[in-house]
Image 1: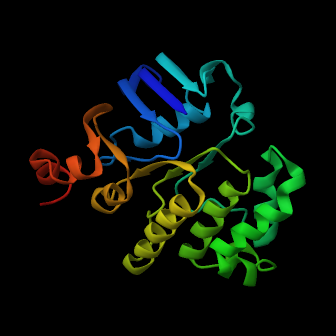
Image 2: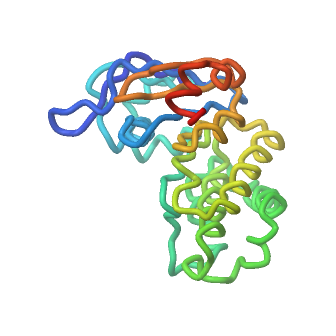
Image 3: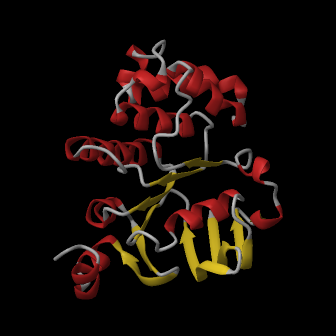
Length: 235
């Protein structure tokens, strides 16, 4: 699916990522956990082409992603849901989903895909003609995730989906991510500061610290790792 090897990237003369190697296989949910400033969001921006790589490689299904234009990466099947409920606030819920479908690789199946999205997010069907900016924060996050799904991606990248949400809504968001993975078999790359909840969802995980991979392993390996528990899980 996606192979990131020896990746270094950053802003100006500073590296936010140094020699990072990460892999997401077909159908895997992979979590990238770590504190603020660890380089998690920079990783996503580099995959999306917003931040240029300084060294290393990123391959997506054998394609050299670093040679692809940022605008082409969505068409290859990569959907990036950025942090912070970034919806089109003056558009309706349906219009937001239609914007996501602009990168759809098979427009002929859009109506079927829209129906599947509504099955996963029944509230969005009810609110489809409501302006996205009038929804609650948790509902806007659901719109953002659904808009990512509207492009029929092969890899869904979720950047800090719990950011700014009330605790009760955070549980709902994580439950929905787990449901999406279970129901669709979609490959998901999840960046999240709430390490415990994010690692409990994953098949495999990585912990970033100061732009480097500090630990990696399966869900159970990381949740039972004494150093990870003490430094990142608050145990």
